[in-house]
Each structure stands twice: as structure tokens, then as C-alpha cells.
Length: 245
Length: 245
DNA sequence: TAAAAAATCACAAAAACAACTATATTCCGT
DNA sequence: ACGGAATATAGTTGTTTTTGTGATTTTTTA
Image 1 (tube, chains in turn yellow, orange, brown, blue):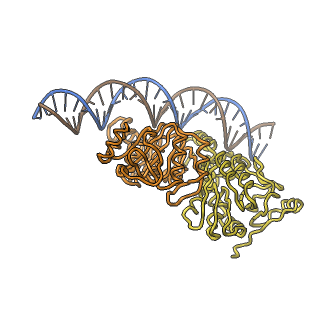
Image 2 (cartoon, rainbow over the protein chains, first blue to last red):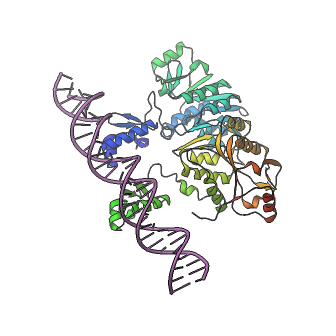
Image 3 (cartoon, protein in one colour):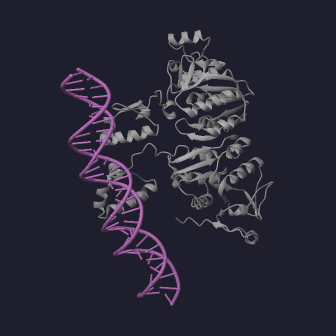
């Protein structure tokens, strides 16, 4: 129900499963503990907040068009023969699948969806990053991931983010931040991919300053306030045009 | 009753067949195991659940009979709560899918099929090993894999091999051998899984001496010559019995 | 600020589970 | 065909877990 509608009422759940509200409360508490949803008054939601990021299975279904546009614009930066890093996230997964168009390539990723998509493609050398699997992000994280990264280097890293406030990008999860930072450290060039609605949001952990990126690809101009802040900081956005191609 | 009504109450079944509720419980457990229904509090239903679709019980059916038998015997060595390593290969993949039965577990693997099977199972902490993906072996290998392993430790490692000659196991691929050896090094106990036809064969690279393993599981006795060599070396095989269970 | 709605708490009740006992059924050698 | 061991099946009892109820507190709304 959450994946379909984004949120549910407690009463609806109680009715649907014919159990008491108390039971629903308790079960939602458990699910919240497990990080699968966020309890709100009167029910539960899967929409992300500052501390909560929704399950990738939900994010995967959202805004496919926007993601495709941004990914396609990002793809322009990839030179055949180079080594590319793709981070976690559903937008990154879309880009990952497109990488076959720039063959031959070496692709480094901790994103399980990208591994699935590229593993049997000829002309793609796939280097998977290990670590502890997170089903929420559908990827690998942790010390193992970071240590593996420091044995490698890449020409360009594609990083995505759920929140950009002023000139800083944020993420609610510590381990995810560290993985992204490690990826940036070992790459000559860095490209940030972010939907225009993600501007003006923030989250618990700061991830990187926008000036650290060589390119910032988005699908449309964010609000005037954000634009001004960016202009002041001398940051230019690459706007992925409507499905020209 | 399920087909007609979609669900049944445990009390109704108990009354209808005039047996105790306990008996109904046990029978429903069996039927659930066989994948015919789903137990819910107070009864059973055939409505599909959310988690239910990726049904491991059916997944296990893929893979030859021999592999299944060896894997099931190997499963006996797994204690709930421990850390298990599963190496590459299709027999290992069959074992990997069975590991849900010994939950909770931490599973370390470079086997892509195992990652696919276990990644969304609750009660399984999946630690994927990174490295260069090999589509031939459907897994990850190379320096990154080995280095990652040395940051970890495990209670038991399940290693498979395509060739055993005298008291040594072999593999044709250098990188695979190194990964397997690294896995053995960081595990308290080691278990070798090998089909009986693989005895009396050899390959380019020596992998390990059979005496290094705490258990060697196979499906049937190999030829008399092999048996004698093993006996002389004081090695005992565990023969996985025919589909007992 | 009071009324209403929702969430929480504490305890009773129901259900599920585990361990053990009893009873039936099958298998085997004679 | 028989007795008896081995095995499978069902029942009992006691424990643990889950759920429901109604009182109580907190939060929201008017």
C-alpha cells in the first residue's frame, strides 16, 4: 500500500487486516525501527524526511522520466575507454544501464542494480565494490567498501544526492555519505546528479560542497532563492533538456 | 476450504477434523513449508503476502539433485548466529539459497547468485565481496576480493572444487584459487563440497590439501583407487544420503 | 482553552510454540 | 503371520509471544 500510495491511514490498515489499532501501532513501530517507513500522526508514510530515506523499491518507481533525462545528460561526460564510478541510488542505476552506449568502459560501483545490469555486457569491465549489503539502498556500504575504493582510481565519479541546501549536499545516512566521499576522493572528475526538487532540502549529514564537483546535472532550474545562492557561489548547473535526443 | 474461502480459521479446522489445535498447527506448518499456504495468526490463507513472492523453497529446486544433496548435508554444519563464507560455483549457490533455513546468519560471499538470493532476506546480514566481475564464474575475484577478505573473519567456509586428485584439490583458474585460499585462511572451520565424479581429476593450479578441511562432503563414494588414497591419508568423507528428509 | 483525536500504557486474554507422553503404524526377522 | 523394535503421529501441559481492551496521556483542532 505504501509503495502504491506513498502513505496509509492507520484506520485503513486496522480495517484491512481486521486487527486492532493497537496492533497496527506496534507493527508500524517495528517497521519504523527497521527503517522501512516513517510513522506520522494517523498512519505511516514512505516519503523521505530529514532523517528518513525511503526504500529503493519505492524510489525506483518515481520520476522515471526526470531520472532518465538527467542520466542521459550525465552520459555525455563519459569517454569510451575510461573508468567510471557509479554510486548508489535509482538515478545512478538508470545511468548505469546507459553506460553500455559508451563501451568500452571500466565501471566501478557499489550499486547492486548496476551490477545486475552490466555484469554480462561485453566491453564492460565491472568492478563491484563489496561491503555490507543494505536492502534499503540496494547497494554495498561500510568499511570494506571504503577500503576497496582506496585501492582504485577512476576518471569520473557520478554521485547522486537527495538533498541540496545552499552550496552543500546532504544525506541522512552516515555510511552512504562515507562511500560517496571515498568515491569522490579517488576520481579525477566528479559529477553530481540531482533532481531540481531536491534543492532547498537538507538532511542529517553533510556530504560535499557543490564546488567540489566539475559538473552538476539537474532537470530544471530550482527555485529563485536557490538559484541566487548558487550564482553567488559561482556554481553553474547543467540543465538536462527535455527529451531531445 | 482455502480454495473456496481464501482463508480458514484454525479452530474451524480443529473442529472439522476433530483433532487438537496442536495437530492443525503442525500440519499447517508442513503445508506452509511446502509452499501451499501461508500461516497467519488464528489460521491460514492463500492470499499472497508481500515478502512471499521471492520464495526460497522453490528457488532451491533449481540445480541438480546431486548439488542439492551435497548442499543439504553441508547445511548441517551451519549454526544459527554464525558467520558463513560461501565461495563461487553453482553448488555453492544452491547452498547459499538454503542458508535462510539457518537464520539468523552473517553470510560473506563473492558469488553473485548467492547475493541475489539472500539480499532481501530478513535475518541475513549479507557481506558482498567486491572485485572484478567474472561472468564465467558469476562472481567477483582479484586483489580487491582478497584484500576485503583479510579484513573479515568467519566461523565456517564452504569451498567447492572441480577437481580432486590424491589428497589435493585443484582449479584451472589462478584468481579463483587465490580467492578460495583467502576464504579458508580467515575461517575457523572449512568444508569442501565436491561431487564424487570430481575425484581422480586435476587441473593447473593446486588449491588446497584435503587435510586442511574439517569436513569433505560428497554425494557418493568415488572409485576404489581414490578411496584407498584417502584412507591412507586418514581422510574421511561425509556422504550425503539420498533424498532422505 | 476546551473538546476531539490519536497515541501510549498496562494488564488480561488468546494464540502459538516447545517439550514431553501416549498411541498408532510400519518394518523387520523369525 | 507374529512379536517387537523403530518410526510416525496425535495429544497434553506449561511457557512464551502476540493481541485486544479500556484507562490515561499527549497532541491537534476548533
